[in-house]
Length: 181
Image 1 (cartoon, rainbow, N blue to C red):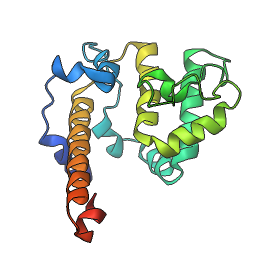
Image 2 (image 1 turned 30 degrees about the vertical axis):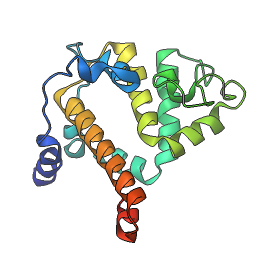
Image 3 (image 1 turned 60 degrees about the vertical axis):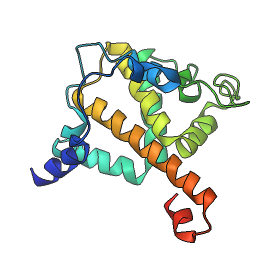
């Protein structure tokens, strides 16, 4: 209804065309690009969730984000390989590579998977959600629907905007732009 319409309008200005070859390049593009050509998608698209029966669960997950994301990753890992517990956990499941000296699979995940997952959800919440989604996508050969593509493009624009704000904040003495960045 109205709320679903507003949510969808937020993403409407971004194209729902399939990801181009250029958008599939790079560390993050290649991670999501592998799902771009699959015809099957989740039963409920991202923009349909606020209007679906899953909405109360989603609201609860937003209020308790870290525990909900840890629980979802554990469920996804054990759905992909039943009874595996946390034995297959790796930071962002290795989909996004590492940063400097922080490399997935080399950060004590084998001995301390739950604390590592806690850090992942706190420090990299978007990547944590995407990695969990990709486990399920791989397991069931699911692709990206139009809403997923719009969200990816919206996220990219927001990241670029954030970079510009940080650059402006570095170049000026105005405190307002520091808060914006």
